[in-house]
Length: 442
Image (cartoon, rainbow, N blue to C red; front, side, top):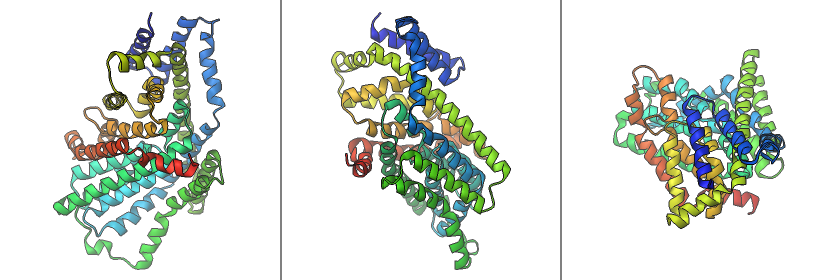
């Protein structure tokens, strides 16, 4: 049987198992191990695939960053330190038209820098920002779009957990991937803010400014809120500045961030037994989930490497179909958007990474740059109807007056903004590569 047919059968079997409700890591790992046994037999190397993948996972030192950053995010979230951020933006940005929506985007950027997961930003935005925005007369479609778009930044702005997963599968440095996500993430946040400011200037009813009685308060109180709101930013700086300057390793910086968040919660008197227990339990659950997924992806990818399927598919696209490398890359991005209508970011990456990542390298593209492209495309897929991941998260958290149709219509302009950002990063790769090349001197 040809390499192409073996690859097609493996993918078809995996998708069939996923459609029956099997867990992602179970379906992928099962297909990888069974394929290895059938191809090479238990004594011909096929029986070692799963064991080798597990050993490779256990030896990957940067994986220690994963529980550290997840713990840091949950401590800051559960101890309500994130609430102080929104109070700060509420007071300081309120006088502007659309100021609270702009403040919500800035809140999401900082939440992303604290957690690395889009779900955390969505939960905080929907529970803290959404009720306040609706109560102050903001358009419901505007604010639901703002929260969904802002929360998607969690998988691009460092410390992104998704980029850690990509780094493991693509065998690329986590630090360079994180730095590659900084400028595109801030650029996208700036584009969101520019869109909100223009829309609210054209139509002030979409985002009215706060009335004077709500924003007038003593300057000392405003400064107190500013100090409290900037605490998470200080934690991020304490963690990232030593790393960027080369004073600490990536793992050491993650430990510093987790410890700083824990001490901040203790000093503010918010580190209760309940907060600690919830943070530890959620950290353990999410860390284990990611480790199982990485293990399955490594086993699946090892089968593809052994088959040489990547070279066969490259030959199919370039020689037989006559497609250029850029046309193949665009088709790959479109396939991510299609898969994003029914899969989350982790499942998408694990399913196609064994094929796409080596293919990108064969086509001559930079894998660090492609990691940013993948992440931005995933953000778009998160909000693409009919089954975008963020759409249903928002529906579950939004009040009854916000319908699913409202949620669908709210994300249309933000999807266009994100597509424009993706196009800019594709046309000008240095948007993503300039910072890691500057820091690492590559």
